[in-house]
Amino acid sequence: MRHRLASRWVVLTCIVLALALIGYGLAHTLGPAGQHAVQGTAEKSPTGDGTSAHPRRTRLEVGLDGCTHDWTDAGAGAQVFEVKNTSDRPMEVQLMGTDTKGSTGAHQDAQHAQIFAELEALGPGVTRDLTTSIGAGTYHFTCMPEDGPAVTGDDTDVPEPDPDLAASLPAPVEHAEAATEQEIIPYTQKYERWVKDQLPGIRTQTDQLAEVIQRRGPTWRQDAQHIWLSAHHDYMKLGAAYGAFGDRGDAIDGTAAGLEHGADDEEFTGFHRIEKGLWSDESPDDLLPLAQGLSSDISALGDDDLQVGALELGLRTHEISEDTATLTLSGKDDFGSHSGLDSARAQLEGTRELVDLQRPLLADRLPAGHLDAIYERLDRALDTIDEAASSHPDTAPADLPADARGRVRSQVGQLSEQLAEVAAVTDIRRAT
Image 1 (spheres, rainbow, N blue to C red):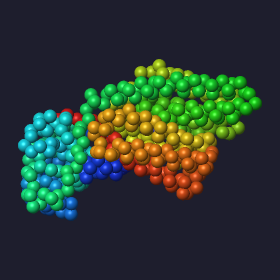
Image 2: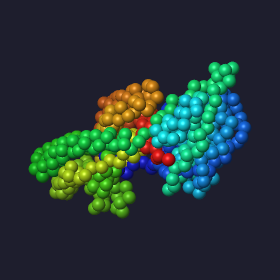
Image 3: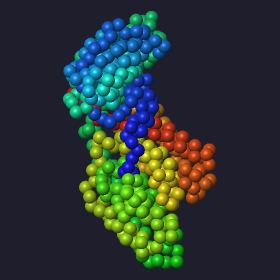
Image 4: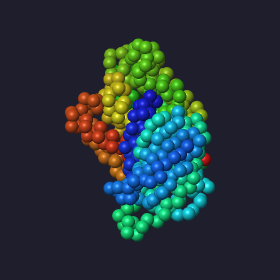
C-alpha cells in the first residue's frame, strides 16, 4: 500500500489533462483544494461570437473583496474567460449555475448548483484561461481563496442566442453537479468496512511468513518468498487507505527513501525490508524479528479506528495509478523481488474496487459513456500488465523490453488521466 505518493503537483498535472474529458471546459487545472474568494472586473465587450472558431473572450480579475461581479455582455456558446488572480493567495474559481434562464435557484442554493467550469490553484498574480461552453440560463462565479471564505458573485443571465447564430454554436458542456460531504460519507464508510474485511487474510499470511522463517525448513526461503508475494499483493490492493494507517503504514510498507543509511538503516522495516532479505542471502535469524514485527503491525491495523477522509476518497482513486507509474513501474520500491508487475496489478485491482464502490455517485456525475470508458481502460491496463508478466516472468517493470515497457506505461498513464475525472467530480465543494 502506498503512503509516500508522488508529489501532488504531479497528480494535479494529470488531472489537468483528464478534466478536458468531462466537457469542453470543466477545469484546465486541479490542484490542492483550498478556500478561495474574489473581487471582479470584466472587459465590457468580449471578443468572439461564441462559435468554436471564435469563442467569446472575457477578461476577469479576482481578488479578496468580491467575485467577478462585473461579468457583463454575456452570451451563449464557447467561452474563454481570462482569469487573473490579483490577490496574494491561491484561488479556486468556478462557473456555476443553471441552464434555465432567469432561475435564482442556482445562486440561492449554490452548494447544489451545477458546475460548468472550474479553475483550481490559480496562483497569485497568475492569469489562466477558463474555457467552457454554455447555453442560455442564469450563471454566477464562485471564488474561494486559500484560508478564506467562499464568495459568490452576482447572477448573470445569458440570453437565448440569435436564431441565425444558434445553429453554429457548440453544445453546452455536460455540467457536473457539486458533490457534498453527506453524499460521499456513506461511500467512505463502505470502503473502510471493505478494508477492514481484507486485513484478517493479510494477517494470516504474515503469520505464515513468520512461521516458515522460524521453522527453517529445506525450502524455507522459496516458501517465504511465495507467501510474501501473496501477502504483499493483497496489501497493495488497499491503496486508498494509505493515509488512514499513519506511521504504522510506513512501518508496514515503507521504502528506504529518506532514511539516513538507506536500505541498511535500522528503521527500515516491513514488507520491503523483508523483501530485501528474502531475495538475498540474509539469514532466518535476521528476518524472523522483522516478519514477526510485520505480522504484529498488520494485526494492530485491525484494532485501530480506520478513518478514510471523505475529502480524499475520489482523489485517492486517481492517486493509486499515479503511484503505480511513479514508484512501482519505475522500480523505486523494488528491493529484490522484481514483482512490480504483480504489485501494479494489485493496485489496479484496488482501483477497480473503489470505482465499483463509488459507481452510483459517479454515474450521476460523469458524462454519458465516461464511466464505461474508465472500466474499459482498467481492463486494457490489466490485460497489458498480464501480457507483459506472462511474456517476461520475474522481470522488473524497468527491465522489460522497450516495447512492452512502453505499452504498460502508456496504459497506466491513460488510465490515470481518465481517473482524474473521478477526483474532479467527487471533489467536495464548499458552501458559500
